[in-house]
Length: 152
Image (tube, rainbow, N blue to C red):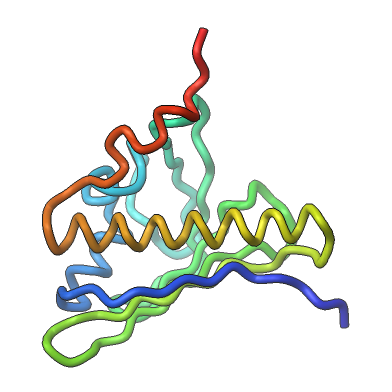
């Protein structure tokens, strides 16, 4: 069996699991820390569109399996074989939640290594932004990626 690479990130958020779950699947909350706009909530076997402020295009996202307050998986690879994002939620003491994200699978090659590094950075940023939004009401993405926008 061929070895593949995965991107991983995790964080503890000082909010109940129900609030964390809702913030991850609901585009009306996601637009406060991750996306500019979403066409609908993440749901099993439904494809939605995510629009990020730093890109002109929209990205299709297909919910694979959603288990309330426990697990979220989706494909946003645009059809690449075997690409899956998995988000595991776990209740911790003091009404907090640990969020663990894995995105797989990337080939063991120079491009796959670069993709795994980039996706790990991206998911770490996602988690920091989610924590800042839920715990402090701050949108860390505001202005953070303006340098990536195309200038005419």
